[in-house]
Image (cartoon, rainbow, N blue to C red; front, side, top):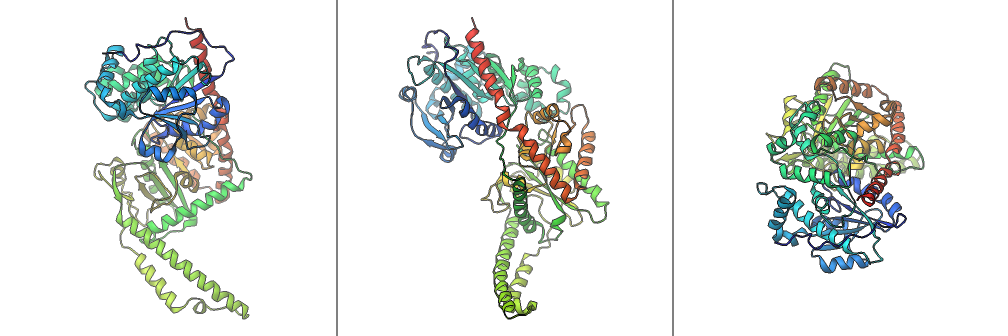
Length: 614
């Protein structure tokens, strides 16, 4: 059986220190939106291109459905790419349809499927990673993509005379799914300097989901035994080997760095905090106007969802939300729901309390949009269309009356026919049912952890509940028949994002709030939260609360969260506007313009270390 690395090229002398560098960046999320790493990579592209120019190429797997939306296939645009296209099957070359339009190579792993047994054999023979007892599709994809990418880099490294490709190259890999090329690269006779970034260790994610004392016992965990117990040893083995094989190993936060040292056995050489692309406005009031615009759209959904059953004052209503991957404990959904229950009990004791509509946005297994929720929105839309038609008629009648010099009575403006149509619409809109707590029909309704918790706390959207709950178990989209907002628009329309995560290596959701001028709650167990604690003085007064969870019990953190929410609720409208202004200014600290330097430092470290190696 031939070894895929047996034809490695001979070593060559180190490149000149002033020579240009070509950066390769490898991730499953290239042209493929599956998680937060997609946001990391996409939003920093303009800054990478500003630094590297056209010497930048992204590499990822080819998935036809995702590529149809995000990828423009143009073919090779450099001589070295033509060499790759001639010798390696299954390559799609083109541009990613995002800001900067970077060069992309996507690998169709289906072209390598018949070699999966060979790849598994070499993973065991060369690296001691046994995958025989684990045949899941995601592991197969990682193996196929990993070996295909390894062969791609072997060919790239053999290209030493092509002037269209600089001799100095560095490759940056994100997460365990692309760890195999890092491991294989270490066996090459001409290894390319590599940077491997763990955004969250796979083992840490599993353990934290099942233990409430994860951080207390972290340093004493038997990683091998735990990985075997969760049946994830091959994935864990790939991640650990990649961390040790990389020229430079990095994590996204100090808290993830501690986890990596304990579970993977190597401390990061560099921390790469995640940034975001900040939208800057010419005038301060512009982002406030966007808040008002999208809040009105949320009002429309709320009226359609709740007002068939009962009504409340939208001018005294606040919109809270939590979002993220469906990890009930890790992402803090459990603490959020418990906080809404406690807040509901406290507000019930007030005279004429405000209304809080709390949204839970995540992706769960669903059958379809619930028919009742859909019908309510459709009836509301019909009512709005009718009211707009009547408004137009009344406007014409009002103008005619004013031209005649008198103020008309209501019956002069509203015809009998229009009044009847309006009364029929109102009657059809009414319902005796309580507003639903979930907008879709879940596949596993009885077993769903979020629904079970909501029902346990009897957050049933009763008329006398100041806190209402809307569980939206699907991604938001402007094309949705319900909320009809993209996620970033929804964020701008809310009043506060609440993300009290227990295991959150970074945490983009509160950062996205801050960047939009929306106050947010994060936790000191989130990489973003710990970064904020280190770099921002008095962040809470600027709209970012870092909830203490490390070394605090669940109930202690719950109490502090509810106290903070009550404090926010007690602000008047002007105070909330002033707080949003301070929050929006805070976002500049997390712009990629400030944070991208950490990536460049890691690349330089990798090149320097590789060149100085014996």
